[in-house]
Structure formats: C-alpha cells, structure tokens
Length: 227
Length: 110
Image (cartoon, rainbow over all chains, first blue to last red; front, side, top):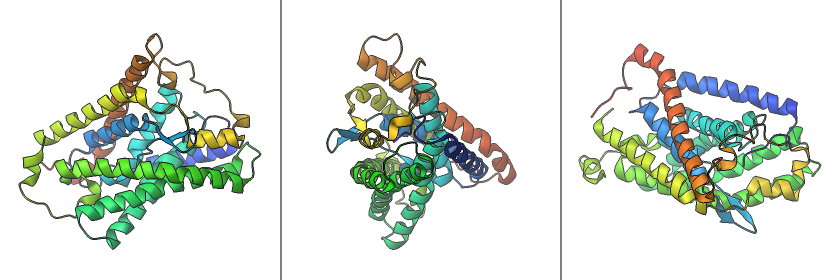
C-alpha cells in the first residue's frame, strides 16, 4: 500500500512529512531507553526481514495481491519505538532505491505503514495482552488481532489522507469501502505471517520478543532449541 | 551481545536473504490493494512518474541483469543488506547517548 507521487496533493504530503519527521525524532530519542539485548542488530534484522517479506505479494480476492506491512510485527519484536524506526528505514530504502512509494509521499507512507501499525497497532496488542492469558498463546493471539487491525487501520488512514488532499474525484465513502474491503483480506495474511514469525522467535529466543518480556522463562529450554 | 544472539541475527538475516533472493520471484505480480482501488476509483489521475524510476534497482529489478528472476533476487539482496545496515546503524548511533548515561540494560550478556 505504498502511495505513489501525485495521489495526494503537495500541501497534505508536506504536512505528513513534518508529522513523520517529528515521529522519527521522538522515536530516535526513545531508541536507547528500553532495556533490550542487542537493540541495534535486532532492529536491523527486523528491518531486513520486513523488507524481504514485503517483496512477497500474496494473492487475495479478484486480481489483487497484498503484502505484509510488518509494523506490528516489528513492534512486538523490538518495541514500538524501534519498530517504527525499522519500518521508516524500510520505507525510505524502498522509495529511494527501488522507486516503490513516491518520494513526495514518504511522510504519508511512514504514517500509514510505520506509525499506525507500530504505535496504534502495538497499543491494541498491549490491550489484548492485558485481557488474554499471560502465556505464549496469549502473545500469539494478541499478535494476530493487532496485526489484522493494523492493516485495516492503515487503510482507514489512507482514506483520511485521501479525504484531506486526494487528487482523485471518487467519493470518500466509496474509497473507504473499497480500501477497507480489500485490506480486511490482506489483514488476514498479515496476521498469519506475523504469528508465524513471532511464534518462531518465541520458540528459539523468547527473551528477544519485546512484547513477551513479562512471560516467565522456562530455564534451560531456550538453549536446548537454539538452532 | 552474546554469541547466541549473534547467531540468531545471522540466522535471521539468512532467512531474509532466502526470501528476498529465492522466493521473491514467485510473488504475485497482481496490483496490491491500494493500487487496485486506485485503478478502480481513478485515484491515480494525478499520479506522476517516480522521481527515481531510472535508478539501478527501480521496481526491484537490477539494471543490466537479463534474467528477471535473478534481477529481482539481486535487488532483494541489496535491499536486505541496505535495510539491515541503515536501521542497525541508526539505532546504534541513536542509543549511544542514553547507554552512556545509564550504562545499564544495553549490555546485558548471558
């Protein structure tokens, strides 16, 4: 869901760029605050993994594909601040190196695909974790719910940006319905990939999952299953 | 950083490289959700060509590589290393100050 140049007018794109720059600045200030083992290589790994997974478009209904957004996944693995930074780097590299996502739309894309999933999505993950049992199953169920919701919320955010400064002529309600309608299916894919990934890390190095830091460690088991 | 964590990062990067180099060519080439809606609803009436559309890796295709699968794979590998290095480097630089200030948490070894 990378917005190309010219979908949204210049003033809205610039305003989004200012918001994105502010969010990145705050995230950078917070980058060293959370106690986290190997934060720099882990954030790099999360960015690289999300980049590679975003290349893998999967088919959804009627001649349409979707791909992982990965912002919620990143936030569960390294926390919302580092997760938002990882996704921002992915989006900047995609736009500048691969011409994917307009340069003028970078702010919009950072809001939709980095901030909405990593901050709002992680907030939903946090809420779900409070309600669901404090177990690996609870972490995975919360990941699924928040990953699904993060894609739907990102598509709503795009619709809001379109409503503010979209260059198209289609009615807002039509765009909202079409965007959310497609992204509900893409959200299912997002939930599946996010759960598989968080599950794999929980199985090998549960201590490296930021969103599961509160779970009791089963001593010795982590070493036994490290590949 | 413990040796186990180094191996975890290396293993994770290997997975990302396999996805980007080996699997990416088999990804669906249909329009993604936003592109589909944009085409259906004519949201793209004002779309302009990407400013960097002539870059060496534009559209995940490496210039000068004839085989389309290899062109995508090479672009994917470049992207994996670029995102890893930039995101890791950014966080390393950004967290140096607070690590010096508190000198705890950042260097937990097991």
